Length: 140
Image (cartoon, rainbow, N blue to C red):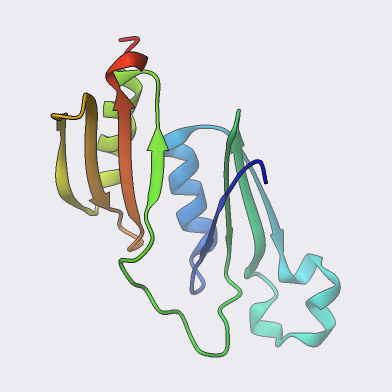
């Protein structure tokens, strides 16, 4: 294995969330709706504009999302967080500020005893984020 990527599931607001993440993190964002896919014929008409897959890429960053909620429904929990590592403290602070807009800061961004600038938040879509910049990577 070479990488693990995050795949987020939304309940009809994938386009809004992924656009927000692009505004916060930058990168190229591509959407495929259910209506544009071979699944279109099998899905209810009201789902044609839902997102089958959205992909946000910027360098090695890959964030994927979808409105395809399983039959069991969308269950949000605190067992998984998105970790954003940056080699630039200024960039990290900017992303933290943007991602926390409309959300809740759970751990303020600060230098910690293990030698990193670190913070945590829950964004306005209910996703948990941990942001980290190790002191050996500071490039203000």
